[in-house]
Each structure stands twice: as C-alpha cells, then as structure tokens.
Length: 71
Image (tube, rainbow, N blue to C red; front, top):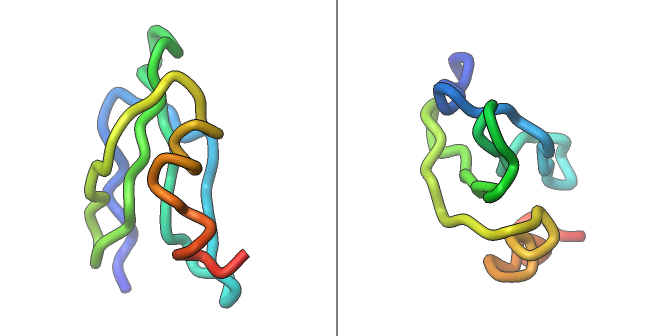
C-alpha cells in the first residue's frame, strides 16, 4: 500500500489503529487553532473526512470508533 495522503494544513494529533496494528483513523486540527478536531478514515491511500467536534473524545464517541477498531 502506498503512503497515505494526509490533510494539508492540518496537524495529526491522534492515530487510531486496529488490532493488527494497521492505521484506520486519524484525528487532526488546523495548524493555527484547535477550536475543532476532524476525524478521518483511511480509505486506500487518501483520508476520508467523517466529521468534526470540539474534542477528540467527542469524535471517537460520535462515530463509535471503538466498534471499528475492536477495542
């Protein structure tokens, strides 16, 4: 698999991996401010934006990330 294309102008704060240690999701925010965080799903190279929230924890709960990664 090729290197994933990370969102431009955003900083990755959290990487969420499955039980096989494969990257599945990232949580980012804009470089200039951390008013909102964005959740992306890794889909064959590029990341697909799923949504935004005021905190990383809120994103994980809102999109039920635990179900996808098998925690």
